[in-house]
Image 1 (cartoon, rainbow, N blue to C red):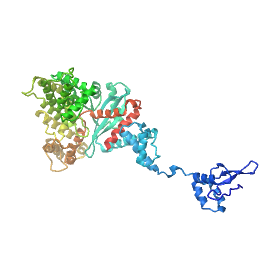
Image 2 (image 1 turned 120 degrees about the vertical axis):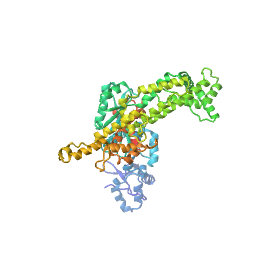
Image 3 (image 1 turned 120 degrees about the horizontal axis):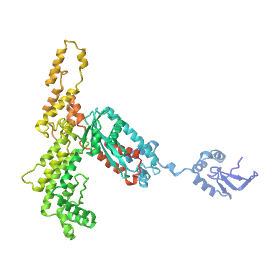
Length: 601
């Protein structure tokens, strides 16, 4: 039996005398029964009381409330007593709240293209601790976030597959293109586009996968087929949109799908060629030198900003045009014209004689060029959308540009040269008449442009005839019904078929025909250019059941391959120089997931 120290006060019963190996008791040494720490004992309990109060506050409070005879019982409970730590009294987030925060972190990293190692950022940790009111919270590690993103990708992809199966019609348009990353790796991107049952235009990424081989035509065709097989849409693809590269054109000839060339590329290439062989070459060269000077001289830029403020204008930098950046020449010219006085004042102030400013006649040339290129910019932006119908706009938009480029009596020789070249180049780069069929049908099925004024009069009726033939082909076959009918019923069947061919409306609702449906659609008034054609079809889909099915098919195709360009811009934010070593499968997950999550908002 251990002999307890009989000490008055709160330490009573919390210490025992130390025993020698021979069993004798050392009255000069005591041991704490709670933590087994040894102390010197000189008949003073001050140091012992301090130890109990500081290290064992629970035992101290308990010992103060028990009598001397109960003190020995305290030793029997010493194993259940422990020191209270600071974090025991700190409010902590629950496990479910921590899990939710981890999921939100993973979603933020994926959607906004943040590097995964951002979870190790001390500043982010401090922000999260402050926001959660938990000073001990630690963000998840990189492995946890990577696992969360992978699971999120699989879950979102499953949702997209369900949408393609359940909510999409039997026609999906896709666009495809190639891209080279900062790590000099080639990727192939594909986007899908369709109109759902609610007549909303859906557009999202299908993949961006690493391409291991050179971009030969047969390999490009195989890649399109592989993506279609992975998503189970081989039988649903209606059109494939690409640029006009030779390998892509050859690949499209090998595939059983309609090809739509990127009309924005066609327009921009037309502009580039016309500018290179026009009377604007000299003045544009001067503009590039002026902008380049300000780009390379911080002092001149500062002086320019001061002159802009002094003239009551907005402080803004000049823009340098880039051949591969659409509408950049127009942006350079417009910015220079807007800041003509400020630029001239800056050059005079700094006595820079190396640069030659445009003459008054050349400034006039730039003003004419701005007027010529502004409609092209508008059409480019109009064709490049993916949140609205764009396929049916191509022919009206190009016809609009063609009219703008008509020569007038007031046009000087250099403008006449540009307009002639523009009309010739644009006509040469557009698909031939046979390949325009899809665009013509889409235009006719758009209630904004169904008057087909963008086509010559003799071509308009051909479009409606094509639609009539398609509606007739879409009619359910009645061969089995005819075989089962009696000879007495045959005259009535033939009569109804004759009425169908003549295009007359039947008195019975069951005997309504597609030709009557088409004629009624043609009689409808056109809607405003600002109205939504999908909303019109949503309101009239019950009236034009078979025609609306065609509208869903033809209006879903994008006019350009710009959706892929946007996908590559997104990929460029992810595959940076610091992240050039990302695995291809991780690039696919991050790019697609970011695209999906942003479009869900």
